[in-house]
Image (tube, rainbow, N blue to C red; front, side, top):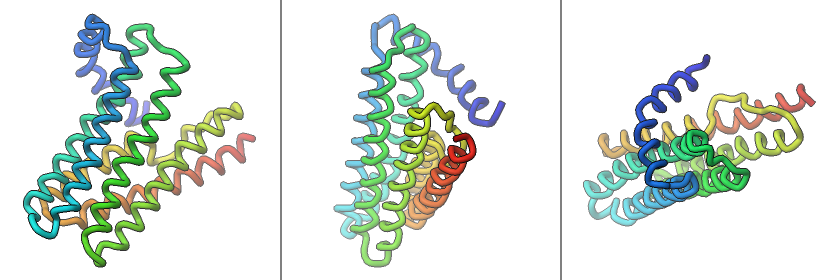
Length: 213
């Protein structure tokens, strides 16, 4: 059992009572999936608002970045809940799986784009960090694309270091650290970690598929 499985089991122990309540209230997994997208859209908007006021009101700007990170964590929890809810309630469907994967991509594009706006609006000193964020976006999308394409060809492809849960945690923790430290370097470092490891993971998966194919 790897570390991701251990953490997942711990989280399930905490959220399962809530999921049972949602089932009794007839809340569907698709509703939870959409709620996660809304949460990530809110986080992206908080980053954009921070970008608009970072020159004039830095205290408010960094507070918004902190809250953006908190919202990403909560939305990430919803992302775990929808699949678990579907399994517990016997509500799994092919459309639900498609919706979940599709909205995950939208969610990640929204949050990382919001961070890119924040960094690019923060002056020429942070241009490099904005460019790195675009590299993080590319890597994140390629990790998911290579797996989806491989599995469409009948190849299991779950290898790699920077899968979606790790990317969510890195993004959220970097944003929260940025807010508390009032220093954009923290979120820049987070984006650099994702850019490096996500693109390495995508390449790793391509090599894996070559060996398996």
